[in-house]
Image (cartoon, rainbow over all chains, first blue to last red; front, side):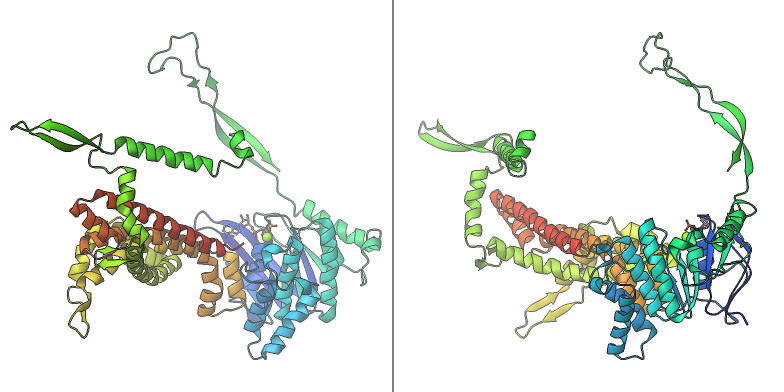
Length: 304
Length: 294
Ligand SMILES: Nc1ncnc2c1ncn2[C@@H]1O[C@H](COP(=O)(O)OP(=O)(O)OP(=O)(O)O)[C@@H](O)[C@H]1O
Ligand SMILES: [Mg+2]
């Protein structure tokens, strides 16, 4: 039995009639202890996909199963790091993590729970910031709190939704190494959503591209057979790196790329006849005003 | 403008100019006392004082000051039920406002929460709220008297300590001042980011915990904006209520002085009401800014 299994999952938004399909026929199998990266275009439906795994959304068709059991609601066994951090702004860093720990381990003693919070704050190097409020932190620090909160729940699977998307390249690199280091400590199952192919190659065991929307679907799974620990500097020249990168990009830019569609529509041109200054000014200005001709025109546009 | 900015006078001088202009306008339209010497029909000289001016009965600033002095000099004096120092009146009014206001919050906040949480409830309640909201305190008070006509608490000496008119007064203040708290709480609950609720869902927080650890803190800034506006209205309503009941307080004093024809003290009351209202608003905005999150 696979650990996480998505079977011909489809999902769309909007009411009956005006519905737009975001994800179509998604099939995904993740084994226990695996680090899988899903790479896709912005707006393709990555957050939608991970929300279904988290149980925050229900698929319209198909099934999402964890250890053979259908996921019907969110729960702390699936730790999620949201794309926009989602820390509670009125709680300090410590309290944000403690809220999760207290909720998931109510049977522990107060000391045990405090130690758990401290342990995970130390893991993401945030011990000195424990008493600060989220608004006093930088974006990267907030993201690390969010990671610590998810990890401290000791989930069976960790879902990371573009955890580093909002960060600059340098901070990104540091945090990527940190994520890999933390993962290697206990090799928990991880699904990482990203829009950066290199990030996926550096961290994951497998990369799966998500085609561009609408009706996005997962492409072929591409194994990253580069031994760990992976060295960022040497990676760029490794043949395996180039091969994986090419395979992913070929899919994303080729079959899975944005379909070119032509749209033809009727346009009403807003061309105006200018104000006629030779006419005498009347009280109501009826003769002088600019006039609209409103010519109609047909046009076909090729959408990229 | 630059001149003002440079010397940081614009925050001192400009308001002073405004106040000065206001005083001059007041002086200009206020009545002036003139003494006229005339002869009566028997040929005897009589002195007659006549008030002239745009608004002959309006006391001038100086007269107002003179008439108000005893109330300001001994602000806590109690010479009689309706003859007390101005701060004594203010405290009486404030305590009534606070009681009504607390009732308004105790009812309004949960009501706002339910409205924010349930679309069905909102649909059901909306017409009632929209109709009740603009009703004036003058209209609510008689209804309050009717509603609470049987309320009567008597102390040992047989004196009524809390009667129908007291209940009606509290009712009027509460009903009038409740709405901003209700509306802002409802808007605040609806505006809670889905992300926070998702966190609560992932952690499987119970309903109570979601309410107290997520919904309530996220709504607090909105709630306090509502609370501040509500307090402003409660303070507006107090004057009407005291006029109708004749209770001792700033509004009651105002009405009594009007009936007694000493118009200077009306102005004293108006200024007191304005200043107290301003102070209350400032205090509440300090509290409000304390609860601003993120
Ligand atoms: N609640 C919603 N209601 C309606 N449409 C939605 C909703 N959430 C997402 N969508 C639409 O679904 C599509 C996919 O959104 P999603 O957030 O999953 O994209 P994404 O891949 O995570 O994008 P990004 O990389 O920018 O985070 C988008 O076109 C978006 O407009
Ligand atoms: Mg997203």
